[in-house]
Image 1 (cartoon, protein in one colour):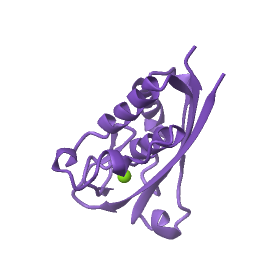
Image 2 (cartoon, rainbow, N blue to C red):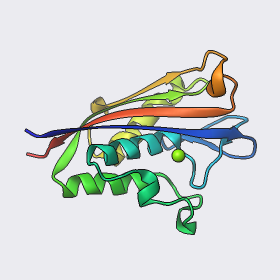
Image 3 (cartoon, protein in one colour):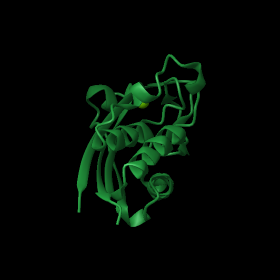
Length: 160
Ligand code: MG
């Protein structure tokens, strides 16, 4: 059995007048994530983790933010593309572990919806998908609500 491990992280500024979409879930918030696409920090981190496991560059090399095609794009497109590259190379997802760093609001009510969305995009069972949430303890850019961040680690295994 061949395995490949990948890591990804992402950060977006928080601003007024934008939706806050995390893991494909719109979270009610006075501040939203700034960015060229829908600015889904969690899907971006997971996309980079998949691409990293395959040593196929990063999300910016596949979907440059200078390209108008990706303006306000649903980030599910990015992750679905990365997953299709994994399948082409004969890999499937073993498991994914992630952490979202956001000061407010609390993400707990949305965690299982995020896991379900990720499982669907990764074509794996929800039991293989972990989403954890942490605050910034009122310090740094996360803690002062200037940004949110996501970290992801993924393990791919050779499809049998
Ligand atoms: Mg991003």
